[in-house]
Amino acid sequence: MNTRFKKSELSNGIRVVSELHPGSRAVSISIWVLTGTRDESPDVAGISHLLEHLVFKGTKTRSAYQIAKSLEALGGDLNAYTTREYTCYHALVLKDHWEKALDVLCDLISNMHLNKKEFGLEKGVILQEIAMSEDSHEEFVYDVFYEEVYGKHPLGRSILGTPKSIALMKQNQVMDYYKKNYTGKNSIISAAGCLDHAELMVGVEKRLSAKKSATIKVKRTVPRWLKRRHVVEKQAEQVHMLLGFPTASFKDKHRFEAVIANTLLGGGMTSKLYQSVREKRGLVYTIHSSLNTHLDSGMMTIYAGTEAKNARKVGDLISKEVTKIRKQGVSKSDVEMFKTQVIGSILLGSDDIENRMTSLAVNEIVFGHYRSVESVIEEIKKVTVDSVNHYIRHELDIDKTSGVLLGPGVTDLKNWWEDLSL
Image 1 (cartoon, helix red, strand yellow):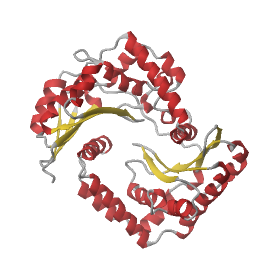
Image 2 (cartoon, one colour):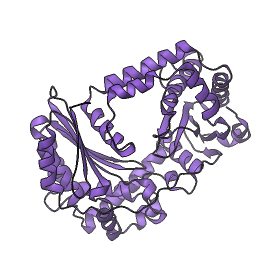
Image 3 (cartoon, one colour):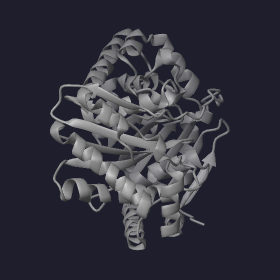
Image 4 (cartoon, one colour):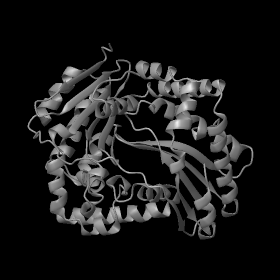
């Protein structure tokens, strides 16, 4: 048992997890609100992300400037981000300043104060962010892909929302959403660093014990994967190619085989796709695969950016490499090398207290309990060449491969794109 890890729960349902790192000068502390894009109704698409922005515009006790200055003046960092399944507010400070960080974070999730002017200004900022995301084609292609494969399911929506949903958003809708979702049973506090758990609990009790428990009643449904091939004609320097297929969720028994398969396919410079498409032929600057994992579903995607004249070559090479791996399998030496690579990455990441803070929270969200770095590594060590090859051949549903091709001249490639197989 890891004596450095502690978990407690307030009477209102707030869970507190922490891991002591006595040699660290810093503390990474965060509050996770278990509400994201997939919990929104279509008429308020983007409200979780908009709310994440708005809490920084002021509370009942701090102005926007005072919030920004609170930790920055101490050399610390305060930030937040929204995903499709949760919203995270996080801070990194020197160990002597952890209580100030906790105070600011608790203020943000408890005492937001909105005025009409700031609300209107921040909606304008989000509308600019949406426009910027559409200009960032490497990111925008993922939003299009999610919409294609998940359709009208909430997971298919952009985290930012749409220009229409943001423009029509009302101030009272945001405040109602804040009060409904930023509650005890919907919150997790996670901390890592040179911090005593008992002292942390005193600080949390002091600031959040009065928060209502309130169970969130939004029911999440498992998305149905839609097999789609889509082209988006856009003026751009490159064609952006994204292919993907359904794969393991966070809780899937094959999740570590999925991690190894992703690493060998396109997870780094030694991966099959990087070596074949970039190193041997120089057809791309960027090519990689990634796992996009949710609580009840997941996907593996392959991205490449290339000149329009090379799009067919790149797509055909990706098809060739994936088909080769499926038919011939992967060697024991390759599996062992990529296992070592993944284990090394995990061990290096475990020395970073921000990574540890995130890991504590995600394990609590997904599994409801602590998973040590050592236990994760032991699970990875159990992965074999046979289990990886079985996973690739029987669990990766390649027959459901979907894709988005975005860039100049892609309309002329529509028939080829629809026929491209993996």
